[in-house]
Length: 157
Image (cartoon, rainbow, N blue to C red; front, side):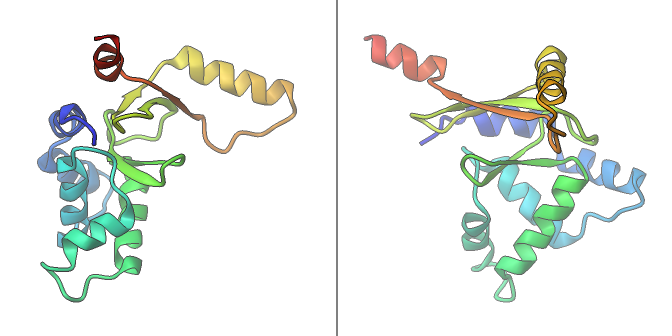
């Protein structure tokens, strides 16, 4: 189980009011369902899958479906409000919301904590490697697994 660090970090970096403003600036609307899906993601203690989101929504909205959740997630990703962690197929709030960007995710294989970073040196290195190998990158996102400081400290004792 992930520590609450993840939820606190992302809840502080993106508020629902800020998400509304980002959507409005793009001429888009944060509908009640999109807003609720985002809220579920931002308050989750760890990255959360679409079906876990649906499990939270179902008791609140009998009409909620996997298709509706995925549509909301697609919108939230396109708006730059959430990210999909490919290795776990789960979603987290964006630490740098409102614009598309390359980034790196440090994923603890023990507790599931995910830390989003944005180091342009890493992004440029990935792009340069792709070019060198004749590979056109679709996404400059890098996911790295390891052990977070908390889990490493626990193991040392």
